[in-house]
Length: 235
Image (cartoon, rainbow, N blue to C red; front, side, top):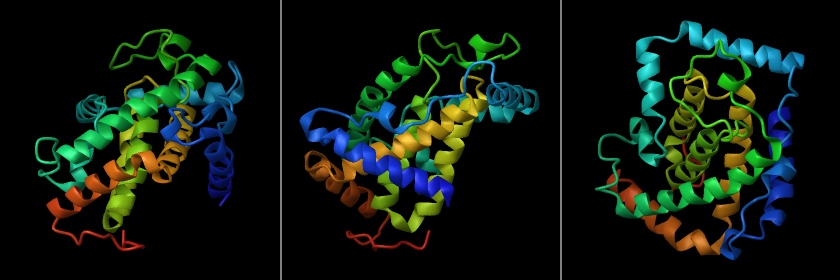
């Protein structure tokens, strides 16, 4: 309940600040996200121990799955939609989400640069990441998590019949950033909120409407679903 209250407050603040993506601006994530845990705080120490605990327990299969999810692509959701969910077969869907990747990056970068929150390997040498990140590519919020949840919100509105599975896949996509050793849990939670704010903005932006509806029709046709989704899917 508290999480939903925070989310709605964030949306109410961010949507007016965004002035709609049609004007070229993105939501002001600094205005809606809480700050990351302070360096050396008990919360920060606990988060580091969480990262180290995940590192100690990750298996080769976990590592392979996390590395695969390093890709910025909506087609990582093929687990949900099946083998036909690929760019070559869904060009309009691919185009929409390539556009979203660029939009998300533009929204996240100012927030990362504002907080200058270092990634786990730069906090402790005990962290052994599965990928090398630049020291000035800050940790908070997670860009991957932001993208995953932006994609999930749009996909869940396109195919509400699969809503639960879509968000479960977004959760795993985000969690893999902790498995990789390149993000803290708070980075992921901030990405969840940021991605939801961004997607909610775009769903109300007329500049995105034509691309969104074209992608939705294409995706639903590929799944042999009615063109118009139900208002409330069973997922």
